Image (cartoon, rainbow, N blue to C red; front, side, top):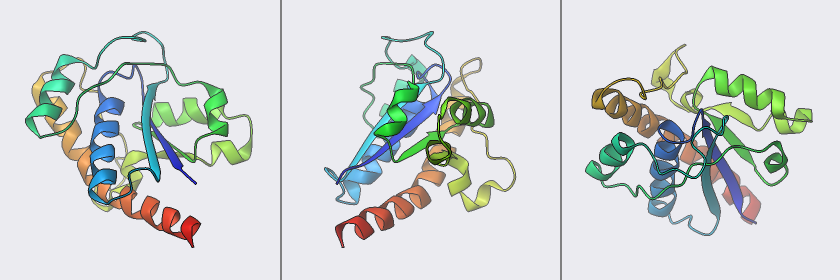
Amino acid sequence: MTYRICFVCTGNICRSPMAESVFRARVAEAGLDGLVEVDSAGTDGWHEGEDADPRTVAVLEAHGYDSDHTARRFRAAWFARLDLVIALDSGHFRTLRRLASTAQDAAKVRLLRSYDPAAGDDLDVPDPYYGGIDGFEECLEMVEAASSVLLTAVHQHVKGQAA
């Protein structure tokens, strides 16, 4: 059975496509292709159909990640097919929890940085959209740090399903 994860930010052009690309690479490195499906979306539809922000693309490509992406809006109906919905900040977390129609769906929503033990109490990945390239680099560092622990959790879950 495929384990499905969706990363969610505001417009699906900066943080969530970055997290999707990084985590997809981690899944491939772990040999979990075909067992884990990785996706992303935004809480708002402002950028639906657009490519990722050029700064996101530049940072991803500079670090060897795939940058192919088309923005779309998260739909509440997706909860039924998803195992985990990863919010990039607390605002997204609250929005996604409100979209969940059941307690079971709400429990699928987690903050990405909650998987980073070094994050402390600051669990938001800041929105780099209104700043320079440094903010996108910082975002990538946070995403990479959390992705390692998230991968361990997903791997354990997938391994448990296969047993």
